[in-house]
Image (cartoon, helix red, strand yellow):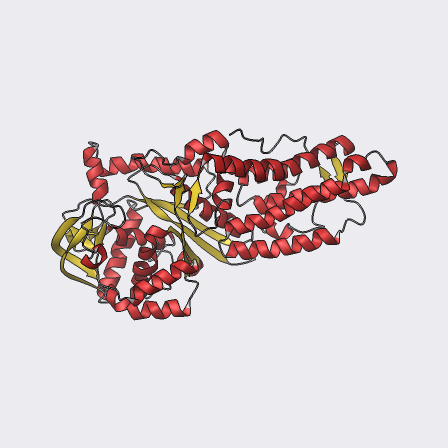
Length: 509
């Protein structure tokens, strides 16, 4: 399949250590990037860090560091986690990169020249931790941040404004014409209602904040951290400097975000792009939040889930699988060690791992590790199931419905286990007249394993690679379009398999 696919995570604010929410978004983006590469598409996958703003400057001062020294330390935590999670990003962008600063300033000037940026005076309530302004109407009489609950600061200062109010009607028209621009549907409805209520001009600069990108031609002003951060998606695709890169990937842009930052991405960002005369992204998908045993994560409660600790205890692919399987993407999820262990043991150990281990052991026991493709290999029941699974798998993946896509794969797993039990190769092996039928059964099970390895690669790359190596067909991953090879009759003429070790030993807990 030809084409391009540009997938982004938010750039994560470097005010804290990465947690399960960061891991969730980035794992989902990685699954999509791997899936589209396996379809033969050109893929650009970006993630990174947001390193500007008053909050960073204050944290650095408290730590006795310069802001640059602080962000250089913290960014390593994210980069290390992505290595441990096998995240296959093509670009890791930092808002302190010189190229990004040039892009932000050129974009600012473009909007100013078009008449969408003007200087005025701002007075209102501001949350330093969230880097967010709030109106009196939004606060409903309470002088605390609606997002984080911390006290707000009253600000009155000169500011540059973006004429967001001019885009109420254009954005509504766009939403009417593109009902899948914001997903899932509940988030689309939320954004549509918000825009319909009327948009107000947005303050996009601050005085007296030195840690950020200066307004071009007016260095006393620093560009608002959100205006700065959103433009990273254009920096990555070479806006203003690499026309070929931009034209290849920007039309296929997809943003994954948490629901708490959806309005920035589905209201402010598309309005900025409309003002610049640029196409909008194909999709903004907002996923839910993770709680921990039913409670909101917080440092004060000590219940923040550290992905590195989970990986160290249980392994990276168990963690990736749990994140993508446990909850429908878009809804809120709950993490508990008990749920993690139960899901892992039931799905990975008892079902998937058991099917593979039993199959490979019997191939060694009855055929010394080698099974040639038999005559009359076709099996209508297998073929009809696989065709349906493939079609539904692709549909779910295109909708970012990862849990449902994995559910389709597990239909093959369950069928394979039932097929193995019904055919009972251990009984066939006792009857010399059933030798050819035994070969057919074992070959079908091995080919099922080959197909499972390919379909699971986006989700569990380490395990899938190991499985395909056991089967002696790891070269399939080097094909330009491995997903096209997930069909009967496309396995090797001879499976020559390695003696296996359990892929997923049962966890205690």
